[in-house]
Length: 94
Length: 94
DNA sequence: CTAACGTGCAACCTTGAGGTTGCCAACCCG
DNA sequence: CGGGTTGGCAACCTCAAGGTTGCACGTTAG
Image: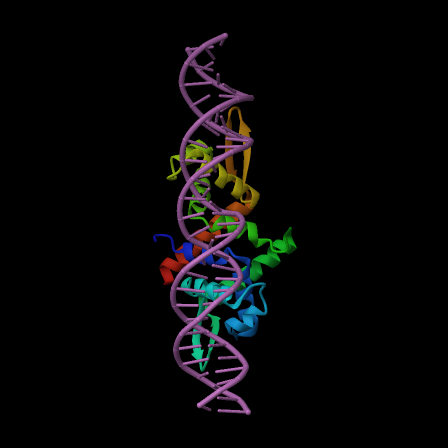
């Protein structure tokens, strides 16, 4: 895999995953079950997205009892800020 | 289409399309046939990628006789520079 | 202990992205 | 004009991403 962007852009290509990124940026942490309330799909589907985000290095997780709490990695936070700035730029500048 | 990123990230998710972006950034313009020499696929497949890039607003085209010359839009150039800077950042800083 | 909750794993289904082939129209050169 | 290029259109194929269901396991509360 010569291109370091494959995983990241693959992960970022899905709007649901971008939404997860934004949610985690706003709330700090979340569980798969909690995120299920945010997205029009089952918990299993959300879990798969979280795996994709984790593989891309954008999200990390930690077990807390029976819960699994997800949070942004540093790279994930970078991307979320980048996306947010870019969105404002696009919406503002044309 | 509430999210302006859908088309752009969808387009950027494919490594072949990122390669096209890079090629156009280096060469100014190119035809589908010319790009076919750059990618492991048929001209038709390249043409489809060019449609995707055009729909995302990253590339524009102009007819020149029997040729169809493609070039980066301003947004496409922005993205290419962004990607290039980002790649160097990732490869350099870990 | 037991019921309820949250998670993880695996099989399965469906759709569309990515690619191919075939064919036909437009254009350039001789 | 006629032959070789360059492009565009459309049908078709394949495969994996995205989603669902079903179930078994650990954890917590009562």
